[in-house]
Image (cartoon, rainbow, N blue to C red; front, side):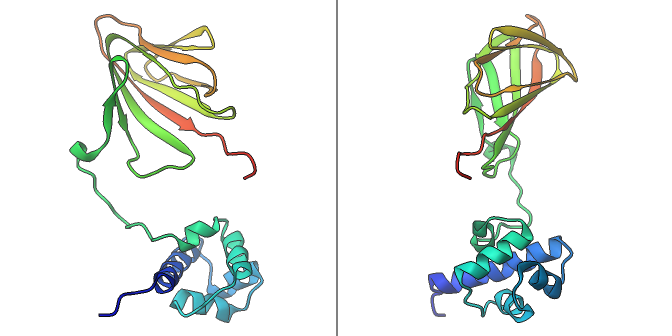
Length: 193
C-alpha cells in the first residue's frame, strides 16, 4: 500500500473536518457555500478530498463555520476516548494539596482542575497573564482563597471569580477535615489575535 503524502493526509483531514463541522451546524453544502461565498462544487470537492483549495477559499470556509483554519486542517480527534484514572495527570503542589486535571486533552484557552486539600493544607497560586480569569468552586469543606491580600472564605457550593494575574493562595480553613474544589482558568488571549 503506497504511503500517503502530506498533501494527501491534509486533504483527508480537511474533508472529514469540513463535513463534521458542517453537519454539527446543520448546514447543507449549498448553505455553507452561500455563507462562504464559494461555489457549492467547491464544498463538495473539499468534502470528497479531491479539492486543492487556495488559502482564500480556506479562509472563507473557516470564517463561515466560525473556526480557525487550523481546525479545518488538523488531524481529526477520535469521537470517543476513555482515560483510565491512572492515566489522568495528578500532581502534588504545596504541602498537602493534590491537583488532578478534569480535561486530559489540550485546552488552548484554559485549564480545569480538581484540587484536594488535606486538613490545614496551604498552597500558593500561579499568577497568569493580565486578562486571565479564574473561578474556584468549593465542592466540600471550607477553603480560604486570598487574592491580592484580601481573604475570601468559601463554603461548600460557593464560587469566587478573580483576575488570574493577581497573587493568590489557597488554604483549607479546617485543621480536621479535607476540602475539595474545582479551579477553572480562562487564559488571556495573546495580543494580536
